[in-house]
Image (cartoon, rainbow, N blue to C red; front, side, top):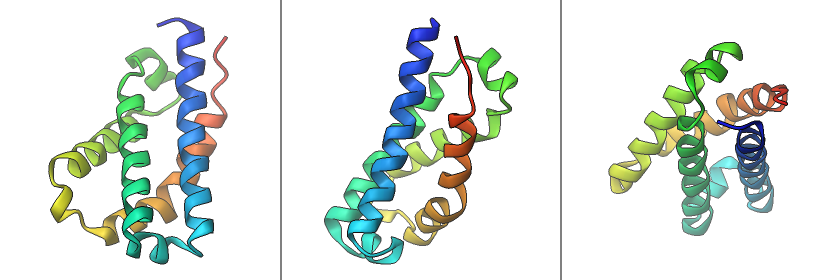
Length: 114
């Protein structure tokens, strides 16, 4: 995977996290976002895109930046959303937004790939 491709994926993930943060601000918080059908759908799509993109990171990059659990968890979440849309536990999604996304954003932002 070329550094240009990796950097584009990193930028895309950061953009998706920024978009999710903006969506939650517009809805006055995570709970209100997930309670609104448009907010909920937008957040679920963003999380799905993050999971799909992280899955494309090769093992060397994942190991170098200690992203294996992040990659696997994000892809699990993507599959959970995509394949069980009607049964998605919004409490689980809320905890991802509160506890996981800020940490992932920091980790991804610190990747220096030339």
